[in-house]
Length: 283
Image 1: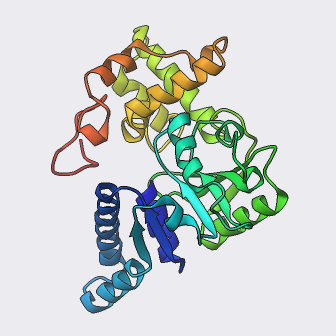
Image 2: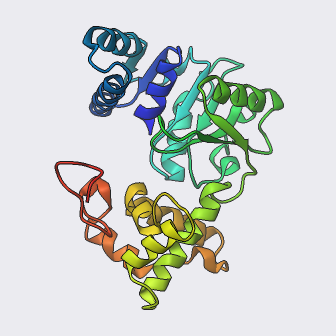
């Protein structure tokens, strides 16, 4: 997600600083180069010179840094994109809190955690907001913008304007579990899992039914493979801990077993389905 957001911003004329360890900034750069190669081939078919100029221009706007304070102190917008873990995210914010410009925005790309909980203890709580992009960033048009009760109106308005400037469509959401999309999608995926566990449908039939009957671009099990089964497990566990009485968020023994077996979906080439090692998106 971080590489996709960095690429999107650079493609729309923004100067970008990617801040992480050397290992991850290198991985980010490689991911961006691969993505730009694919896009440029479609955008400039047979025109290698123009394609290379276009890629070089975008990539020249992306820099890397291993220091959170030096990497973020001059930024107008800082977007955190690490794993869905409350403490891990808060540890990142501690490194930049108090170092941001007074009118800068600190945003989290969380897909499931409470924005107000994430902002707890921050000096810049009024500058903190949820900014949830969807994967793949270059393709998905939607961005959820989630102000907390502490977020200033100016922060919200500037964030909505930014989303518009990078060519996406913003929806403003309440700070509820999963916001709009995931609060609808995750219970659907978990109910599909429970149907299979009860023997009421197969994985394949459930996916086919939701694609051909409900018009979804992919079925619930294909969706979990794309998201990452470990991520699905983490999100459901977090919601279940916070709302233990809500059956929509009950965990699944099948998902727990897949995670124990390291069958996490596309990223491990095996999840609910096996994936072709020569093509990341083909089964």
